[in-house]
Amino acid sequence: MKRFHLISLACAILLALASISSARTLDEIRQEGVLRHLGVPYANFVTGQGDGLSVELIQRFASYLGVRYEFVPTSWSNVISELTGHQVKPDGKKALIGAEVPVRGDLIANGLTILPWRQQVLDYSDPTFPTQVWLIAAAASPLKPITPSSDQTDITATRLLLPGVSLMGKKNTCLDPALYPFASDPLTTVYFDGNLNDLFPAVLAGEADCTLLDVPDALVAISRWPGEVKVLGPLSEQQAMGVGFRKDNPDLREAFNLFYAQLRLSGTYRELVKKYYPAVFDYYPDFF
Image 1 (cartoon, rainbow, N blue to C red):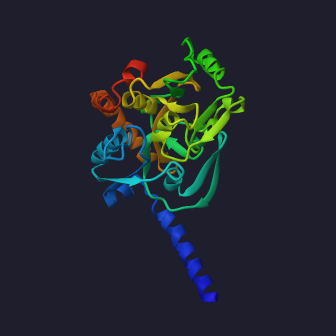
Image 2: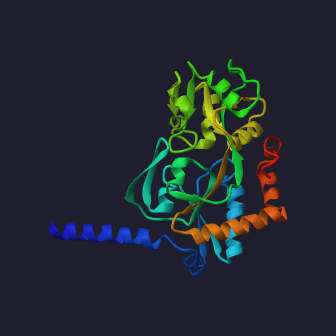
Image 3: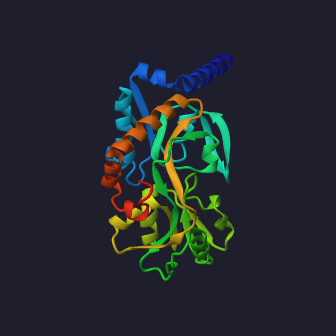
């Protein structure tokens, strides 16, 4: 029994050391010759087919650094933990930090919305994509879209649609209703266990009256199910997405921002966005 406890203690120490040693600086990334990209299949950022806007962006960044690119698949519930080395989960606008876990990647890129609780544990790159949380229903829904005017007025008008409806969201993402003031409205919250890409199909299947989608996923849904998607209105102010970095790795973040600025200036980034999100320019022409 004593020997078992000693072995368990040794394993715990090795796990902790592995967690620490896997958190690499920019110099160590260059020395080891590989950049590890933590990503979750989501919209057209990470398609799951080996491509996507975030995949191509980080592949180019790896080439810029002169290292090999490696994709590390993960999940929304684990992606931040596997970058920071600690279990992390949101509690409103606060981040709750738990036990140590192994670090598996050097950055996060998969359409990661900049949120207050995430900023407590991550540093973000310069914004890479515009977004906003929209209320989405099937085209056959009796709910009627608002008449657009200005952001705050539109949000208020959209909230008036919520009483009595069942609203689908997903925990540990920017589509968790608990993150927003409308969580206190008289509605029924339905939490979805599947992939974010399957939120709208779940609404089509009748699992809820409507769902939260951010702009990129809504654009994908509109192109994938033409004539079946109804955008009712916004439930958040305009937001932005970025690449996530550990707070103790500022050099890697600064290198990315320099690379990204050059990519935008050359027009290459705009062409990448056009490849995966051609309709976004109609909604956010100024961002690009």
